[in-house]
Amino acid sequence: MSTKPNSFQTPIGTSDLLPLGSARWQATLQLFDEVSTRSGFGYLSTPIFEDIGVFSRVGEGTDVVRKEMYEFLDKSDRRLALRPEGTAAVCRAFVQHHPVTPWKVYYHGPFFRYEAPQAGRYRQFHQLGIETLGSDDPDADVEVMALAWEMFQKMGLKQVELSLNSMGDGDTRLQYAEALTEYLNQHRDAIDEEDREKISDHPMRVLDSKRRATRKVTDEAPKISDFLSASAIAHFDRVQDGLTALDIPYKVEPRLVRGLDYYTHTTFEFQSKALSAAQNTICGGGRYNGLVEELGGPVTPGIGFGMGIERLLLACDAEEVFPAPKSSLDVWVIDVAGGSHARDITYELRSHGINADRSFDSRSMRSQMRSANRSGAPIALIIGEDEVAAGNVALRSMLDNGVEQILIPRDQIAVEVLRSLGSRS
Ligand code: HAM
Image (cartoon, rainbow, N blue to C red; front, side):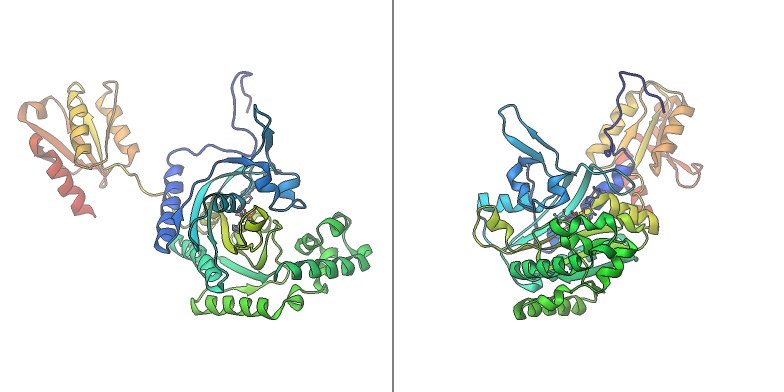
């Protein structure tokens, strides 16, 4: 599409959220608020930008920090970054405010990564997230995963699968990375060229590769499970017991390594089988027992997840569940007797908690009727000269092709509308 030189479009990898799609978006946020609040999480809002140091902590070797971060100097030469993820910001807030633990918070909002945009991958995307700080209890891990699972169930998603792994503690990760690097170097020539360069910087990311040659090598690679300490195994066992007790199906996936460096012990991803493999991870998370300390706080374990709202709704589209809510309007007021009645009646209805709207600009009856139809409101109130003279208003049901109509007294409008709405619900 050609655009005029002085007209603008959304930047690459971003999009506008318009009514009516936004109603579905808001329904998702509302559901997340309900589910999180019911489990004792409180809403946390942190700034969209932070000192860059907050995020460089999430792993200097990761793509998110090295290549994808939107960073800039402000007018006083402070080095800032648009937040690429939520966990480090939550830990920064924890260190700043030292709340009572366990600190259970949830958040939602935009995040920014300079990635190559494609379906399900954007430069500004949105996450729902929760974090529990200050507990090492494996039941806290289960609570976090169960909350994501509850969201999927409530939205009607059936094709979501949970993959689970344990990265052990910090030492395990180091030992394992060493053993894996050695193994990968031994088989260097058999590994796909594209993956070879990751071996020295990020050996664990090679496990992620879907390329056939690499896959053949990684199939036989050492497994992190063989490196876990007795206490890490006990933690992982208790997590699995909890998932089984709550009837949440999962599979242990020893290859599951996540893109961020801070994970210890439990890591997990929820994938939608209804989406294509490249972008089918709708939620990812895990434990990060060293991150608060890295950000200058006391030793504080943490566990949480981030769920991509766009991907979540793509999965809903693919499964044809969680449709946009019906119109939130109750009444459309049609006035062909000058407009003052529409003005007075809409305000009267709204003051009774009824969602009401009207046309402006003295449109014709036909045009106002078209707006009423388009609005999705189940009721139209119609006022013409005859109704004004008789002190009446016509109440028309819009649900049965708009043919059923009764006259109601002008001074009984709110009562009659509420009665009519009540008889529909
Ligand atoms: P993450 O795996 O980087 O983890 O992102 C979590 C989710 O955000 C992904 O599974 C995906 O659904 C969505 N997502 C990520 N990048 C994009 C993108 N470019 N476009 C669309 N959706 C995207 C984190 O961010 C961690 N903070 C999660 C966490 C919380 N771990 C512990 N607590």
